[in-house]
Length: 213
Image (cartoon, rainbow, N blue to C red; front, side, top):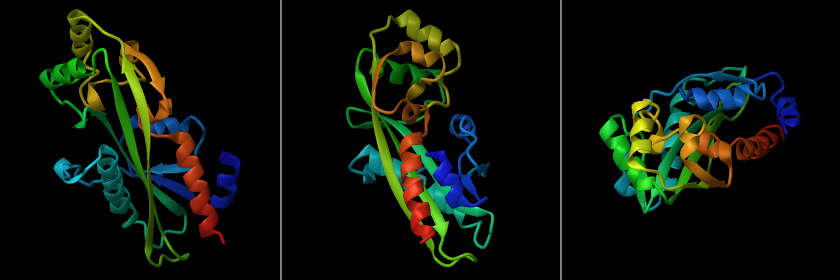
């Protein structure tokens, strides 16, 4: 799917509005034509204002994409800006990054021996016209079910001591040691890492085709 995307880009780049090394790596693994410009959008939206977790991540991804895209107007080598946000949802509660070992412990115990949802919201933002007219956006989300097997307290504690749970949505990184806690994944694995690559390519291809009509 990358070949037709490259053709439609015509040498232009896609801007990744994220500081996540995992999202960057996912795209670098396929030699995706991108430039990374981290967003300064403050991820502090009021979760209580959203009926579903996917609505929350979509809104956050919009904020990130628009923040970076607004600074690219009139830039001829930039085609589209991509913003993304990932959260864990369990029993209606949104679990983001724990930041402290105590919070990580609470999250991991909540997920232990159960199935939870991982949602990633993605927004594509671009300027209409070669010199930048109005900004357009297109948003979507992907959901994946992840099941943890049941682990003893010492396993949970040893994982927390590794330091990996901190700064990871839901308190674990499936691409690292956290993968040893996971019994099964139903859906897009890369969505759990932080970017639903297949869906991104499908949506990006649609947007680029509409831009090139």
